[in-house]
Structure formats: C-alpha cells, structure tokens
Length: 259
Image (cartoon, rainbow, N blue to C red; front, side, top):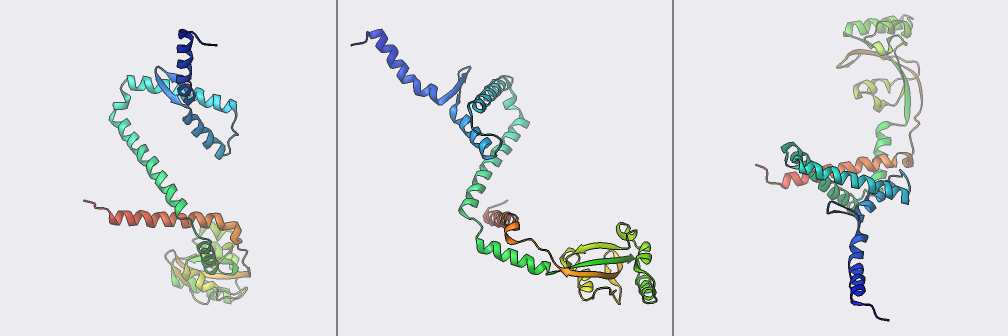
C-alpha cells in the first residue's frame, strides 16, 4: 500500500514535529515552555516530601507555568524587565543561583569526614564536662556588699532570703536559683569558682564578672546527661560543613585581586 503525496507529506510533518511537541508542555504566544521545567519542579517537590509525583501534580504545575509565562510576557511588554531595580534583583538572583550550585558541588566533593565529626563531639564532651551543677547566686554592685552577704551566710542567714536583694531580677525572687547546668554554660570566671565547691557550699570570696560581684552556692551535683554522638551528629556535620565553606570563601577572597 502506498500513500498519496498529500497524505505522505502530512505523515512526514507529523513525525518531524512530534518530538518538538513532546519536549514542551505548552506554547504561549509562540514561546515554548519545555517539559524539563515541569520535571525539575516535580523533582524538587518530591524531594522535599511535599507530595508524590502524579498526573494531578504535573497538571497543576503546568497551569502555574502557563500563567507565569503569560504574566511574564505582559510584564516585558510593559517594560518592567528594563527597570533598573528589576535588573539589580535579577542579577542578585542570578548570583545566588550560580553560587549555590557551586557550593552544593563543593560540599558534595568535600564531605565532612566521620573522624572529624567524632573529634568535634569529643571536644564538645570535654569542654562541657561530665557533671551538672544546681547553682544559686546573689549579684550585687560592690565587693563590700558581697563580703557582707558571705558574712551573714556564715552567721546562719538563709541564702534564699538574701537572694531577694540580688541585681539579677530573673532569679532574685526564686532564691537566686540558676537551675541545673554544666560549667560551660557560664563565663569561665564564674564556673571556675563553683566547680571547686562541694554540695551545699558557698564561695568564700566574691566572684567578679562584668555584671558585678557574685556570691555563689552549689545546691547539688550530678552526672551530666549529654546527648549521644548519633543524636547530635547532624548538627555537628552541618557546623563543620559551614566551617569548611567559610574557610573556602576566605581562601578565594584572599587570592582575589580587590581594588
């Protein structure tokens, strides 16, 4: 069976144009919207766990892209793409997209090592310490005031009563209570003073910080409840990744010729 010339011509046109239509979801006023744009958005939506790939999702994205294309064409017709402010925003967006692509590739090629994560966790444990302290304090303006409080405590006065005069209004009405915490939660000069105390003891001398003079009491001591490596591994990996990126950026800036 042979096709007549007219039908043969139509068949050839159909074959030739089929791939072009397959590559586009729509053509708006002569401007094609490629199917690849839908695929990219679907991939992103699925990766973020918003919803699974489906014909309904693709149809919704298609309609959105068509609407955006119509709006874009109208905006360009009205000259908004030539506006100085819009050009600046476009350039900022372009830089962000390009830089983010480079950063993502750098992170992929330079992953954080397990040994580095373990070392960082061990450093955290060492700095945090293996004990928690239930601490109270009274904060006053002068060393003389602090010494007077210490004298009164030695004479039998209750710490909770004297704490009412503390400058730290957050704890004054609660007996100076700072709750349970590890030494690393406080300034070194403050924590260095109370880690030497036994349960129930008060500092013999006032402890000076930028806030004033402290009289510190340790109510109790217990083993610290630190998170396991697995619990904090994602946070450590993120922190080390950011540290790598910061070093990479600083290295590039150092090599750049800046006038």
